[in-house]
Length: 201
Image 1: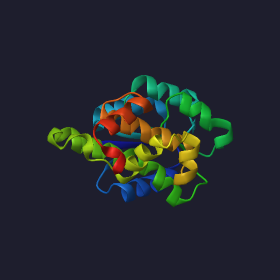
Image 2: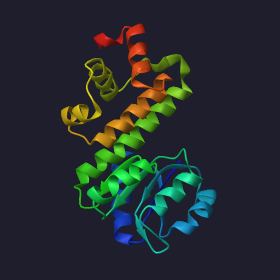
Image 3: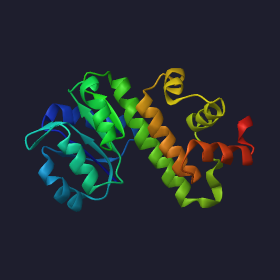
């Protein structure tokens, strides 16, 4: 599948392309300079695995880009990568459906970590879906941590502080975990873990 980097600055597109390749080498990455050609570009180049979206484009500004992409591609993970500040836009972007919010001023290491939370976990889910006999017991180290922290009754904020990641990244991890287990809530995930004897992992 393909990653689409939607940004009108060539240098930023190149930088993001390099960072995505560091997370998952070999991915096909398509640069897009404006929003109104996204649909036709996806039709031409293949199913999207991830969108990286700048909030300031020649044909859109602010939240409208997030809303438009999620309306057209509701099942594709969306990383907002922007020079806008998190204090001003992060909460609104997440409420509109973005999976992560990345400030362009972040270090490459921080950006890679945020992208990894989407790209690598998605790949693991696909591998598991292709091999159902493996069942949901093949959890990543992070997912095992989440189950143990759920059992401790920790909030998303507490978990974020313990793991050194953002609260929104915690939410993304839980969403992936719930999908893997086939559950819809923390309570159901805990019940699944207890039933399968996972709380000793």
